[in-house]
Image 1 (tube, rainbow, N blue to C red):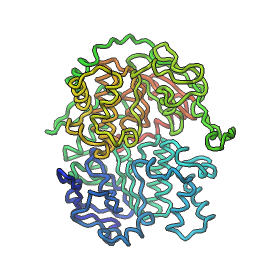
Image 2: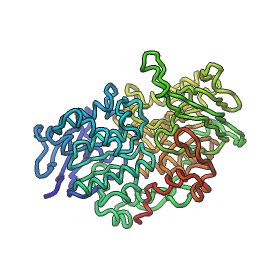
Image 3: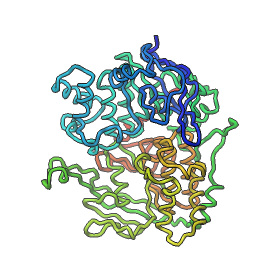
Image 4: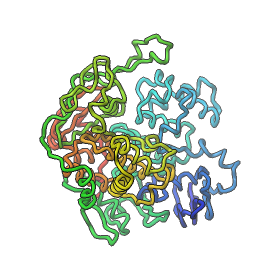
Length: 566
C-alpha cells in the first residue's frame, strides 16, 4: 500500500470570465522511504497539488475530480480525517516563511502549541523538544533564539524555523514547497541531508517542490515534470535528468547553469524542441530609444567605507538599551563598485548581504561609516539618506515577490507609478508605451497589466518586480535574490535579459544570491561575507578555482550540482 496515492486529480479556479484549469488528470504515487521531486515552470500547478493534499485550496479554487489517499484514507470531503492528519501525519514547509509564522508570537510559543496539539507532552517536554528541533535545523544558540519573534530572524533563519515546525510532530509525509529558496548552500546542504536522514530513519515519504535542479539531482529518487497543470513526464531522477524525453524536461535540464565553468549565455529550448540562446536585443531596442544611449566610463560608481550597522533591542525594551543583545549585522565593510560591472555578494543567511543592500538604497541607516554614489555622499552628518543625490538611479529587486508588490494596484499601475514620479511631464501615450516595453522584456503578456499581483505565481510576481525596478531607468540595479522564485528556464531568460540590458545600457549591478552557479555566471567579482565581515574578495574565476578562505571552500564544495548525476 502506497503512503500517498493521487489518481485522476483535477483542480480548477472559476472566475467571472473563465475557468482556469490548475491541474488535469494528475496521477502518481509516493512510497515510504521515497523522495519525490516536482518541477516545472511557475504556474504549472506544482504548489496547487501540494495544497490540495492538505485541503488548502483557496476559493474560487476547487477539486473537481479524482482522489487523494493517505495510507488508503481518502481525504476529499472528509474534514475529520484532514484535521487529524494535517500537522501530525503531514508536515508542510511553505514557500514563503514570512507568511507561515505568526508575527505576534514568539518562536517558542508557535513550536510548543504545534507540538502539544498533536503530541501528548507536557509544557517542559514540548519546550525541550522545540529547542532540540531548532538545533537540528542549524539555528545556533537555540535556547535563547527560541525567545525571539519571527521578525528578528533573517529570511533563511525563518525558513529553518518553518522546517522545524514541519518535522515537530514526527509526520509520515513531508511536503516541502521550495524549502531551500532562502537558504545559503551550507544550511541548504544541512536541511537536505536532514530530510534524507529523516526519510531513511523514520521511513518517511517526502515531496520536494523546487526550481533548483541541483537539489533534484542530489536529493530525490524520482521526478515529476509539470506544465500547464499536466504531468508531461515522470520517472527516476537519473533517467529523467540524463535522458529527458519531453521538451519541458529538456528545457529545465539544459537551462541549469554549470557549476564548473563560466558561460557567456544561458541555454534554452524553443517550443519546437531545438536548442537556442535567447536574446532580448529586439526588446531592448525599445528601451534604448526611451533611455538614450549611455557610455561606460568604467569609473567608480559606488564606494562603501567601513560601513557598520548595529541592531539592538532598544525599541522592544521601552527605551532601555540592551548591549548584550546588540548585533553587528555589518561590521566595517568596505568595497568599490565600478560602472558596467556586476559585483556578487554571497554568504550565509544573516551575514549582512541584504542589510548592505538596504543601506545603499536608504531603507536602513548605517550606524557608522560612509557611503558615496558617483562621488557624492548619500548620508549627511545625521545619518539621514540624501535621496536627491540618487533619485531613481539606484533601484532594488527585492527577495520576496509576495510582499514587495502592492496588492491593491494592478500591474500597470505598479510599473507606471515610479515612471510618473520621476517623469512629471510624461504624456499618456508615452507612459503606456514605456509600460508595454517593460512588461515585454520580462517575458509577460500585455494582458497581465490589467491583473492584480495575487493572480500570479511567485515567479511571475518577481518578473513584475524586475519591470518596476527598471522603470526609473536606473544606473545601479541591486538584485537581492532576483531569481530565487523562478524556474530555471525563466531564470535563464531573465538572466540573459539582465546581461543584455547591462551590455547595451551599461547598467551596473550588485547581485546578491545564495545560488553560486548563478553568481559565477553573472558576476565579474565576488565578495564573500560571514558574520557581517568580508572574509574573501576576488575575481570570479579566481575565487571559484582557488578559494583561500575555509568558509569560501565550504560554500563551493557544498553547492548542489546537477553534474553529480549527469
